[in-house]
Length: 210
Figure 1 (cartoon, rainbow, N blue to C red):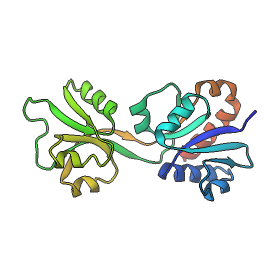
Figure 2: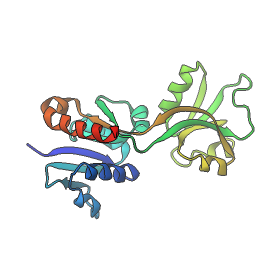
Figure 3: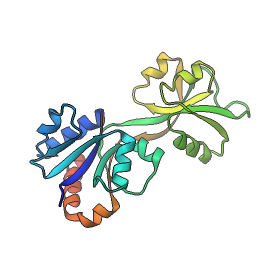
Figure 4: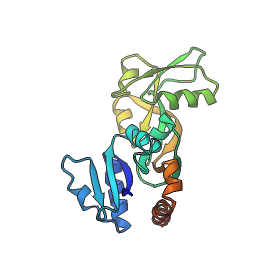
């Protein structure tokens, strides 16, 4: 049987996940000296770590090529998928927020508002719960540009400190929901490798509960 395989989201979540696994006693030396490789043995090969973009972490776990994954709740909300979300890891904390040009009354009037976002499904779902009809424009890059250029009335985006919003003349109108890193598990793996996965989940839960 191959090692238990966990997909890690590249970047800050990757670094925080390595810190977490190291604190649980796993030898993550290979990940700390990774070079250009994308698959790494952890703890002498008992576990394999795969580095991937957030959306691909979900895809790999959903399709069973990875047993577990660490990914932001933002990606889970946007993509959906068939897997178990088993733990809030407590790091990578930020929030989805609706932001508009400073001094404007976003909710004034009855016209259909145009919202720019990388997260079109999250945006449509949230405004749908408010029974508001909006026109959503997908932006891949710096979404803050859209209101500045007159493309949109407001944006829905991930916000940490709010500094980028302020620097571009925007302010938070309303918070949508909190976001943090989550541990997800493939449905078949949860049955076939239950003891191994339950053991890791238990370790993580004990650590995050402290």
